[in-house]
Length: 199
Image: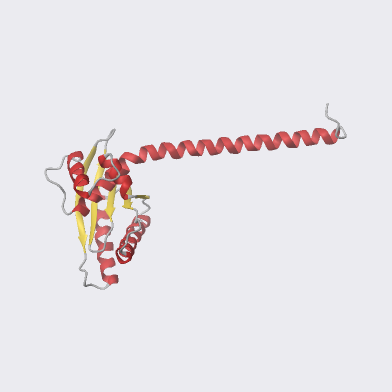
């Protein structure tokens, strides 16, 4: 499976593509950062990110897009920009019929380093090691994008099995409920035929 990971941001939007092999084998296909000047109009900055994401999607043709889930921060302006970029990336993926997965920073950190509280330096170090890179991806946004892709590759099979188990459990519950309903109706019909006297 090929996953395109995106660490959304207006000034720097990290983009990384990773291929997943058997087991936990992962390979870096490409990594980069889409940048926009802080003094540009918002619409122009969003367009710049959108065009960069389009190019990555069309060039590398991933099967899934993994985006960092926006979480609450003190800087509302930063959160707004990040959320807007996330929407642009999700839209670009949807237009190509690609599934989109969102992962929280703590999910990614836990998947990559074993700790949901790992700092950026630790994540970068682990990403470099896991992917067997000659040097650490820079800036941190690029490493985070690769971490997102790896996180999805490692967690997707487990999430798929969980979803399958939940679907089976729901189907069993529906069948059980239907059988109970049928049994009650049959009992009511028998009671009606015998004048309410149970034998």
